[in-house]
Image 1 (tube, helix red, strand yellow):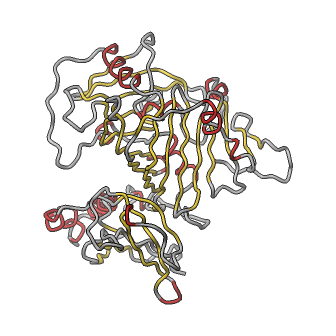
Image 2: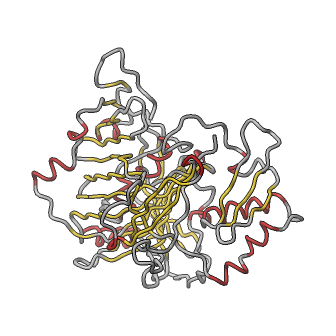
Image 3: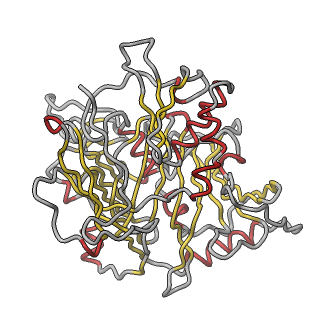
Length: 456
């Protein structure tokens, strides 16, 4: 049976008929269409024009209008030309495919896994043109994906991958240049001859963090994929309170999909597609002692660091590593498995241009120098009440699992969190009807032998 595809954004408000702007908040609605309702029709409503879903709708969710290619790029994009050049090197054509898929300019139609001679096809969204492709090279993510099982809304994207995207703020990259790859139209900035000291960088980070005690964003759009398998976009909200409390809830196609959080004692996460639907949890004490079997390199404090509100200890022995136009602040820490790793914060040495980040990202590095995970800050926003700098767009990757995620935040606002609200918000008691699984003990909370766990 042919899998239903979710159509791309129509870029037109279905209520008023006006064009929708890039980054505008909209409500997407899916209606059954085609023979035997085997396809979807999509409608997009400007947020202020949406009151209720049309009759017969099968799903609806909040999202953002994706960035549209410039008209000039539509005609002259060298990657589109390379894609259509049948005489070009196959590896180069597949490199163009990967770039265009990330830009959402191309959709891939893969052959049936049971047909080894099946044809790969790239479909260009703007024109509808279909271009046949040679088999993907081994070096391509599309040449390394195995068979996927299971179904549902998150088919093809593993639960650990989705969680790693959201939790770890973490991606792995082969080199720092790839982590900090500049925008296409970015011009090389000047290099500050003076290398900042560890004290200066720590003070910069702490000055920003001190401006915030608690923040909330009610509009978080999350796009993630594993290999060439894309999941429907997640839409959610996030609340953070210092020193280490946060809560993120997200839905996919209007259904609860992810719930994760942290308080003073523990962190936890729940994924709707787990079977059984365990609430996985672990105490911070066990994490600090290196007693936890984690399927991915996760440290809760990385979330606060990526958000720009983590405070750093002036007394720790930091290392400063100059890297061309960048400077790195390096801190030696232990992973949840008790292994020594480096947590690195990347600064731009020259003063950042307006609207661009001074802190470009964070990554974890093992003892051999291999990058384990990282997060790149692409766009920022400034909290009006305090002047604090927070991310607006961040890009995550984790190459070992072939995972990538883009997270876009709406406006962050300072929020008052009363003790009663904090106790309710930063706890998993509203998930108490679900079975729990202790990662430190690697065992279900309920010793009922009939309950079977699933590796997260």
